Length: 326
Image 1 (spheres, rainbow, N blue to C red):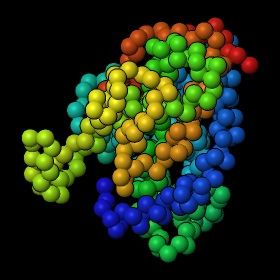
Image 2 (image 1 turned 90 degrees about the vertical axis):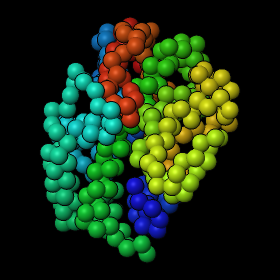
Image 3 (image 1 turned 180 degrees about the vertical axis):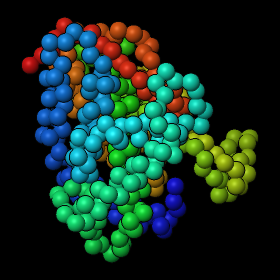
């Protein structure tokens, strides 16, 4: 939510520890570890005939990854799951009734997660580890240091944003593949297809539907409409991703679509710097599910969705299977 130059300073401090462009091999070097986590989660589904793609797979995978990256003890995951649910629910500008309401209100969740991260940061100051949080604390670049408040808020952002949107993208991806069995069969036989396929998912079923509460810095004329300077603007990313002037057959899922300049990760100076990791996670996840699930069939279509206008994804995605391929 910041503007330059303060935005640029803080972004450099964080992205230096997160991957490209400062550490270009960091994400690529994680392929083996990510593949191991994915296959371990699928192996746990052995001897089951029904699975929940969300609870059994799409949630625990990115949570495990971001915990290891940041240095958050994995056994603490149930605690920040509750906090993340409450905070994410508060981002919805159009809240609706939900059968699975957060068990905690936003104020309490923010207070508790701030206390938790503050204590974790202090422990890393006392005993640094080989994790991103320790590196953020000890960074000696020319951009200075993140203050204690900045460290806490940034680590909370990374912890929540590092899994919430990826969970939805994986679940949306499997749902889309299930609705397009011909594409699913292609993916099984053409592993390289997963790269453009994930880009098409980011266009066709993006987890983030819009960006809210931006301010027009000048009068902006679009067609016959003028947005006055100072107006609050909501950017409908999902609508832009289906602009017929930009995309041929915009309402069709085309896995090898070319020139796919979508808004799945935003654009400009606020472009998601976690994009390389999210892309790799979803590519590995969908490839493994396609290869290893035997005769997967959706139990309910449409599935129950999270009641959140901002973040789109199934609450649960139950699938019947005949087994797990080795």
